[in-house]
Image 1 (cartoon, rainbow, N blue to C red):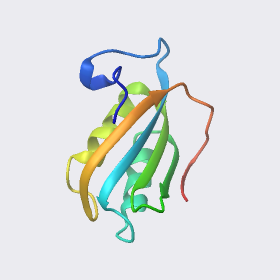
Image 2: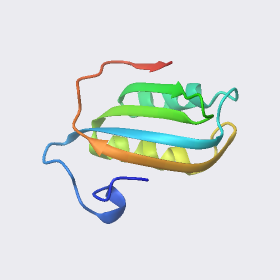
Image 3: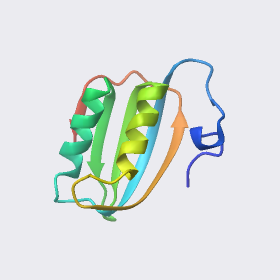
Length: 105
């Protein structure tokens, strides 16, 4: 479930423009190039972070950077056009921790 202070509610949870978003993507998203696709979108948006396959079949995406870019990535994850099939994207916002680069893990 996403944080109740997320962009869908129109509330900015942190005063600074730089944020961290952690998203969990459920569906057929492992073994289909989803992490590579996510990395490419994140780099296009100038974000840092990673995409990681979880044991339960989900992919965890952590991204840091400008809030608008993070919002765009979360929207892209659930908008269709991704490899595989996304059934659900949940996310939460937090303060950035200074991650650099974007990796598939």
